[in-house]
Length: 541
Image (cartoon, rainbow, N blue to C red; front, side, top):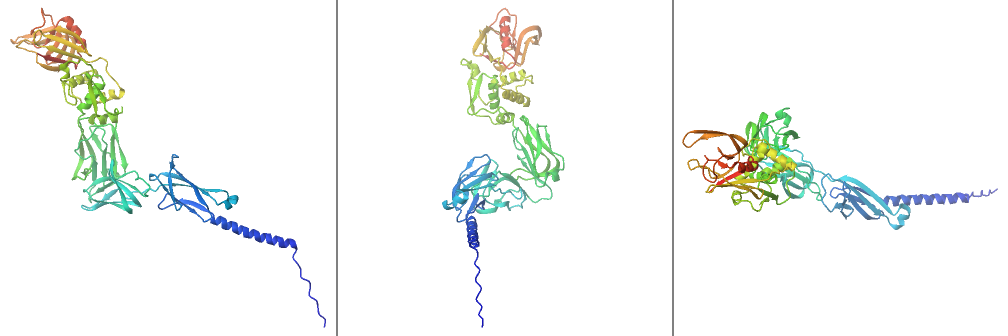
């Protein structure tokens, strides 16, 4: 039987074997590289409690640096804990922050992947919004403010005096407790513990009612300043309550109405605002139930009124002194009032602290004794009359709106008179003398005649109210007859029919007139230019 021999085995070529080994090794290396890349990754993302979170795989390496920057490029220091990056200083809700983290790779990876890996992220600090700013709250029920995010801290109260409170745990609601029937409160909140509270918003509440309710701030019938904004907040949208018509102010006031929000109308005075001493009224297109900001009892009305007090006498004196109308100067204790209508109007009712001083060391004692800062006095009245005459206003010695407007305008412009300050005092005892004092110097002393015993010149201090170079003087003599003297020169009336003037007499220095102070022609001519309207004349024994 024939036995066949086995065929010889075919061997792979050596080159194919080597190639197969190389491919296998390559696959193993690629798999290893993929595994290394997978386990050396890092990513930067937001975090529910921190600012950002760096998630790093086991082979990623270590954080070499982590930096954050505000929108203006200012650095924000960070605290790093378990990959979480938390600001060390308070941020503002909504603030844009750029974060850059540099990760240093292990040495055995750095040759292949680079020594460092950089991750960047731009995000904003979270913001909590009030869900409903106009609430309906039943009597005796607490006022609750809800937020669209859980917050960690809140602040509430008057806009300039907020009470800050850190919550025990994050909450979507702030319970303000029972409040007045209607009112408003400013509320601010922070979502994260590393944030400061955000910009406050006004939350208002109203009692359940069939008709619209309005909160007036300031309260009706209260005192306000010329620049006080007038705010009306309605329980329903303004368009629904009033339609397209706007309220009207009486008297008319420079300024404008605008919708602060869908429920609120705000009037902001401009320029010099509401006149000093005015009763200002807002007439509404429709009647509403109006309450004050603290929920005072409502009354259904169409007119809301307030009162603006007169300007301060002290501030009037400060401004007249600065403008050169007084024999005193004034200097503020702190920073000067800004030369703007708003700042000057505010100072007119709330004068800054400061001090007065006499402009001249040898001011007559008769003048010094009349001065009391902040109180009505003849020195201030005379200066005011001179100011009114200089500005062609009615000379009545009363600081009305036109006076304040002109005085504030001069103050803002830095205007100051250069005519100086004059004062006249007359000794009624014989020999009777008139002394003219101006800017620290005695200009003239002259004999003069005052009234006879049956028509004496009244003692006291009086401001000149009429100043004419020549005129006719007439009146009644003590015996009942009448006199009419034309062509009298250099007349300065200071008290009723009494005046300083020239008169032709054989002698001077004794009572001879019917109440006037008569002077020789030359003396009267010299005195007259120094005695414009407002100049004080003192008659003393």
